[in-house]
Image 1 (tube, rainbow, N blue to C red):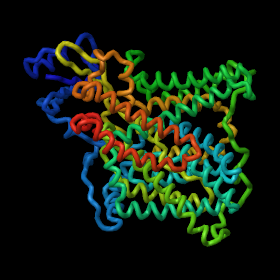
Image 2: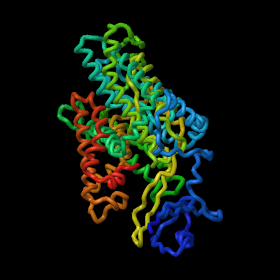
Image 3: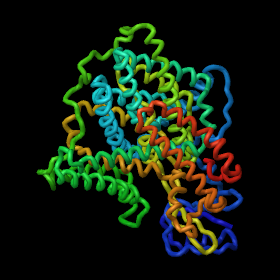
Image 4: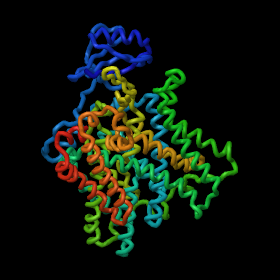
Amino acid sequence: MRYQVTLVDRRSSKQGLDEIKGLGNSTFSLGTFSLRASRISILAKPRCSIALNEGVEGAESLDEKAETSNGAAVENVEADEKFTFSRFGKGILDDAKRRYKYYLSDFTDGLHPKAAASTFFLYFACLAPCLAFGGLMATVTGNAIGVVESLIGTAVSGVLYALLAAQPLTLLGPTGLMVIFTGLLYKATVELGVPFLPVYAWVGLWTFGFLFVLAAVEASNLIKYFTRFTDDIFSALISFGFISEACKSISSLFKPSSAFSTSTALLSFLLAGGTWFLSTFLTQLRSSRLLRPSIRNALSDFGPPLAILLMSLVPPILFPGVRIPELPIPAGVATTSGRPWIVPLFSIPWWLIFASAIPAALLTLLVFLDQNITCRLINDPMYKLKKGEGYHLDLLVLGALMAVGSIFGLPWAVASTVPSLSHVRSLSTISKSISISGENADAPVEEIVGVIENRLTGVTIHVLIGASLMLLSLLRFVPVPVTNGLFLYMGFSSLSGNQFVERLKLWAYDPELYPEYDFTKSVPRSVLHGFTALQLVCLTTLWTLKKTSWGITFPLLILALMPVRNYVAGSLFSSEYLNIMDSH
């Protein structure tokens, strides 16, 4: 019999052992530890849940006590619920009815210290790519769209999405894929000798039309045919992208052609590494034995913001003579090129308006996959979300926001995977458990027991991004290497829980010391490593294609992951093993 003991409230280990032993004749060898949290739960096969609550007689199922953070019980929406197509638009209405009934609690639940820490941390986490991609957008579009447009577009879209969407934990922002697509579109307009912004606007409007139809016919239901195989590859791709951009930014300072000195390069390396280390150390402090619980929890909640603040103070205090790269902050609020804010939609021939539907179809596929995969990663059962999801409503809201942004020549803000996953994890409550099998105890395992589901953090984060236009002089004090360290933290932390990455790490492990996962206990090693190798080939192919001039076809390759999983993996491995390795 295999038991899992979840440690809660600080009580003596003897008292905890007495309570556990009182359940039966099983013998436990727990070693020396202190019990922390408010209850002890024992999970045994077959699936059952027993809770010992201090001061309460008897035992009751923990599953029956699922509540929102404000104490109101809510329905638990099954992640694997079977969907069927219905009448046109019904899925959108059903999403609104299911999710909007928690609208008030979405704001009251956000009044929590953890939510405040999450807001501050993710403000910088979202601001940094907003500025970085905004600067890159100016380069690839000939200054037609730049940093100011990026800030305004992200702020407006993010606030409205947090207010209207079914899943407000999703954060919007510019992404590398959108920059690549926009750059290729600009290049095509230059070669055709037609104005870029009107074509850009019509591509966005056509995309909204396509997304509206997809939302109305409940096309997001098709995402259920994408399994963990696709989700893990997509998540790893985005996470490695953040890590790669941070490393590229730091390494560029060491090149002979760099405009900065060696001292700047070394200090920048230390600032980025220090931000990453401090963010990780402080976040993990909650589960350590240092300090008192209240102090540990506070430092853990505010780990990344504290790291940003402390590392930003290092250059002016300790190294005032070393020039450090600063964020590309604009001088004022105006369009990058000085153009009017509203794009002249009808300044191009009518045939070009209809021809814009062709690139819009590719953009629709990219946005559809990015939005739905990101939302499904957020709605993963491991996060134990209670208020439900709404894929169709989310897709409609996103499409409408893209249409509005296109009219004003703002960059398309879409679901940003890594910040969104960081948002969920920063709002999570994590418990530690010890699994016991016979006389051998495993290392403590982290488990998410709940998330503060709210709209307030998403609204506040994007309001602050908009307010950054009035705080430009203060933002210049945050060095670029510090934001690079934040990118590293977000990239590595988002890999946590990625089963593909966990299996990939097994290649460096002693086979006799593999962690006790379901797939390590039930799947032969040759099958386990073969399945991981197939995912690695897919990831490498996606990464390579993204870097080429054919990057605009990137959505087609993501779509191809579904037949790769169903036909290639299905022919190489038995369904029994695939169900173990590829289930949520």
